[in-house]
Image (cartoon, rainbow, N blue to C red; front, top):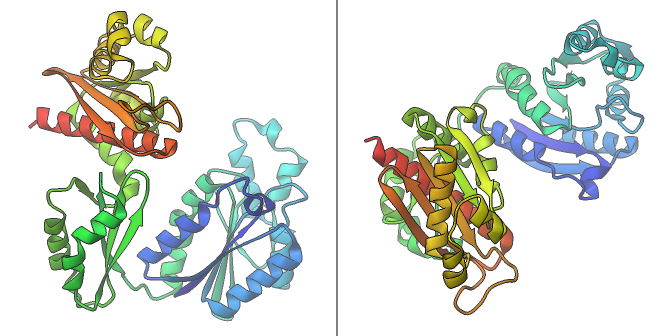
Amino acid sequence: MKAYIITIGDEILLGQILDTNSRFIARELAKLGAQTVEMRSVSDDKAEILQAVADGFSRADAVFVTGGLGPTKDDITKTALAEFFHTPLVRNKNAARWLEEFFAGNPARLNALNQTQAVLPQGCVPLRNRKGTAPGMWFEKGGKVLVSLPGVPFETEELFPTEVLPRLKAQFAERSVRYEMVSVFDIPEAALALKLAEFEAQLPAQLTLAYLPSPQEVRLRLTATSADAPLADQFDKLLCALAPLSFQVGEVENFRSYFAQIFQRANVKIACAESCTGGNIAHEITAVAGASAYFVGGVVAYANDVKKNVLGVSAHDLETYGAVSEPVACQMAEGVRKLTGADFAVATTGIAGPSGGSDEKPVGTVWIALAGPNGTQARKFLFSSVRERNIAKATLTALRWLTDEIAQANR
């Protein structure tokens, strides 16, 4: 199956929001063996939408459209699709019932404008949206399919697996694409490529290795392009070639869940004290539903007064060693552990940048401390000169260390 993805919205072309829907849909389609031939963004203009849809139908078996399904006048996707498929807009009974159920707890919000969300092109199959008011739409024409989905990412991410994927599997012959993922930490992409040069040189022709770098890690995807390609054997060789680097097998999207599973299975309480990461560690932990079972709280101690007065960091050590130092990091971790009653606590203090560095402590210098039942220890890291990278790297490093320590303590 060939796929064509269209995102609609002036806000995307103006750079006001990030298009995450295309990436999500393409990844889901890849699991079915679909080939995405193009991703395209167009404005809220009917002529542009019609042209994009026509181009998509000329190049692909399935066209996926996101955005422009709101109840306001600038959302014209339904009108454009009704014109493309030569079908009138009518009130859909199923969509109307879904709206009533969606607003059951607050019927006063189901005003005349929201009621228009039940008006759909007559020729479509409505797809129930349990996270919002705009239903998805499924169209068929000449053996090809068009799927229209909301622009709100969490609505599309709920609709696609529940309503779209089952229909795609029924419509098109499923071809399984085999691949394995591994994320490698604490090494730049170029250095990693040099390390893996010998491994890549011996790869059979039916296997490809792709590098997907990010501030946190370099993800490697080993893909089999034929049914008989020795994927498992070569992936084992890849993991051996990565030693002694630190790496994690699996999709990057599973990292938060991986951390959460470690915390929950260990039945521990954790906390964090953050300076240079500014609350990002707490954000990553609480991004997973149910984090209250193990996360008791955190302190963003940006100012030295907060380090002293809330976390109990020694004024003498702050003056003598500076905020970015081993003793301060250790006292931050110990302080938040004591304050919250946590079993384990991590702390970060560093120079995220772009300014504030010195010859002794350049930008990217970060101390991370971990306090637990077996005592407190700290490690010094030198990440990069880019603020966003330093925050991301410090966050991931702290979480990896925390999960490793908890896992070892429970063996």
